[in-house]
Length: 404
Image 1 (cartoon, one colour):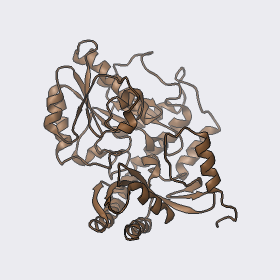
Image 2 (cartoon, rainbow, N blue to C red):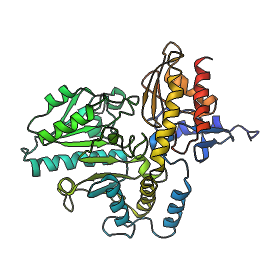
Image 3 (cartoon, rainbow, N blue to C red):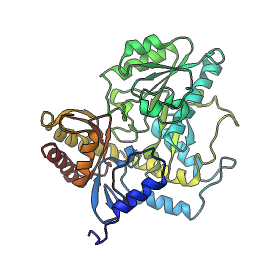
Image 4 (cartoon, one colour):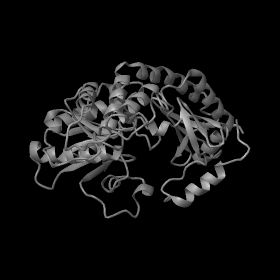
């Protein structure tokens, strides 16, 4: 029930007053959540169709994940990597097995996983491939989003993320996403890796052309170059398979994971690869005080066990088909295009109707939360626990704002 005193305007104003303006959030102040629904400080409920940019794949406060967190909070939360704790081996073993790889390097945020993957690829290039000192390069794609650290934004093509943060880190070669010829031409004897999102999330859920990823895999193998798949947003069930690479039977040399790995409870990320890649690291060469901490490991192990059942991948595939069918029916009725896989969609709204920001605000007024990116594009990424009825409700609200 809506309370007599409306608290949202004051809470929004206070938040804006006391924080650096690195985000432009929608004016909703969430105070509680469960499953696919959140409730604001005034008691209004919203269907969450963003799910923390895929960090909440299993919904808000999934009971098995909350139980794992509570149990671990009562026992042990941090040791640092100076010692081994009793949750560590299970986490690393079960995540390795889920990925079909041999070793795990636990970190905290997605950007940390990307930075760690870059470091490992360079070290592999010098120690294994034999690249001359300080000459390693990595091929990356235009339109990428791998994080916002200084190194990562050095190869971003998003000026909002990049401008005025130089000087930039060298060693990266940008090519058009989906252009195999450009990627192949960018590789030389000093190339140590190709770093790609199997589906570009921040760019608007851009799916590469059919056959592109398998061809990149072949080129990397032929040229003795590591293929690094950033599955931080696309992985862990989001697209209807455990990893988006699986849609074209591609196995990368290195997975970069994050977001959903922490179950929406704690930040957890990881680099996962075989020993001939991750084995180049020796003690003292890389680390993180909180990486793989007991609380994170306990929650992430339960995440891996949820995924091991296959239930959430099936839900994403089946419910995703329903979502995309509903969205495609709106093309020509205010939508120009729909892209994506599973429970992940990028929607291009006719800019003559409204911006993506305006669309997100109108959806919010109807009790559905989504977020814009790049002009008139919005993204939908509901939790994998969403129901058929809730998907239909979200699509109906979108249809309604397109004809207001």
